[in-house]
Amino acid sequence: MFRNGFRLAKCAAFVLAMLALSSSQKAFTADDEANESWQVIHLSGQRIGYGRVVIREVKRGRDTVFTTDTEEHVSIRRFGQQLRIQSKTHTEETEDGQLLSYSFEMKNPPAQTTKSSGRVEGRNLIIESTVGGRVQTKKLPWDATVKSPAWQDRSLRDAPLKPGESRSFKTFMPEFSKVVNVRITADDYRTVKLHDGSEKSLLKVSVSQSILPGIAMRVYLDKDGESLRTEADLLGMVTFSVPREVALEKIAGKELDVATNTLIRIADPPIGLHDRKSAIYRIRTKGRNPADFLPTGETQTVASMDDETATLTVSSVEPPKNIQPSRNQQKDYLGDTQFLQSRDSRVQEHARKATAGSLDPGTIAVRMEQYVYKELKKKNFSTALASAAEVARSLEGDCTEHACLLAAMLRVQKIPSRVAVGLVYAERLAAFGGHMWTEAWLDGKWVPLDATLGKGGIGPGHIKLADSSLSDDGPAPVTSFVPLMNMLSNVTIDVVSTEK
Image 1 (cartoon, one colour):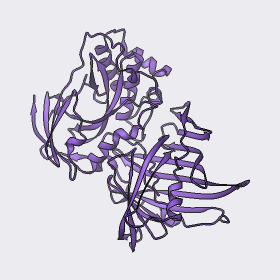
Image 2: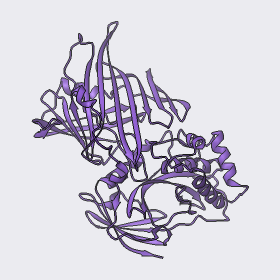
Image 3: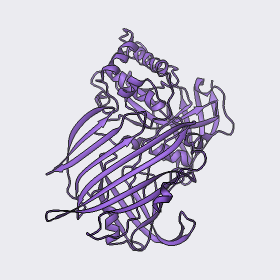
Image 4: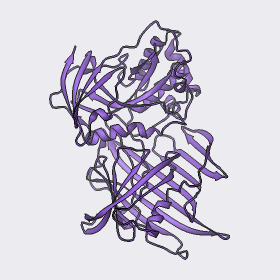
């Protein structure tokens, strides 16, 4: 029911977050061979896919083990190109919800399949993951009080919530290989419309998770604790429990183009914004103060006007030249990671070609930005997120692929790097859309570079919302997209003034 399998999908005007699957499992006994439920997934009022959950109760000697198989299928379009994501998760847990093992697989062709599996051994969770074809094993300390992701559904059926009650617990999310704090709070019974148009009195339950703060979710339960509808404050995402034949119906008509549907249109569009020195924006977000999630840094400053409005000043930044290499600074942004494979032979080859013999970090950074801009000739919008090693081989993708490859190449030359997430102005569309770019640590500050534009730095047409080292031990990469998810769903941007 609260299976959030949030998949990073992307930029150039879009981040797709998947998916709060509502499992309508019926109570079952040990004699049942399997219990199956189906869901249909809607985004912005249009059907984009389906989900399936199968639970089995298995006897292993004297022990009872619950196995849960979840699969999710989504098909959308981004700027006219089809994007398909399929994911499968298998978990095994004890009767009281303790995780025994799991496996997770996500397919998003043409990118390579991402895999993760784990097993609890004593006080440790042993995880083996595969990203971009590279296998990595790590050991995490394990807390036996952490629940399996499937346990929460069974617990609500065994002891349904009553109005006003709350529960908090920790659960493991295979999609992120992370332990997450979850809090569920029951409100009261509401009349809710279901997928077939009928109405039913259901208990409204609010759900919050530590890995995706700011994304509110509501689940509607019947008196047996079974979920029939789930909503998320993200592009109008809704899932319904439905019969199998309904879930498997073909998507009628043209697939939803999430890229164009999430553009933030500008009433009085500026010309040549990326070539200006600075710009001042008035940003409004209903029910939230933009100053709470707009960061201040080298490129931008923010000032609150009222509870729903802020002024944002964004300035252009040029990479410095003739500077000394960083020494003993920002070491956390130099390592080889699953998404930024700076030890990959192809990544290193591209880094050497782009450097062209220069020793000046500022010059190297600009040359690498322009190299990635020129070499990634095929702008592929059908991939959710490819690692630097994959991009180094395919030389295709959109903003996330440009950003990851550039960040990894910078690390080859011992220049600390990270990726930034936010909005970019598309003059042809007169709108802002979701975007990712790269930042390099040069001369004691973070300097932005955008390999999708190749301009040698950025102008005031980029609004930054978050950044990430994409570290294996850091927060899940999707958390960097949370402010963007909130912005795309509920924001207006006005250009107050610009400076040439």
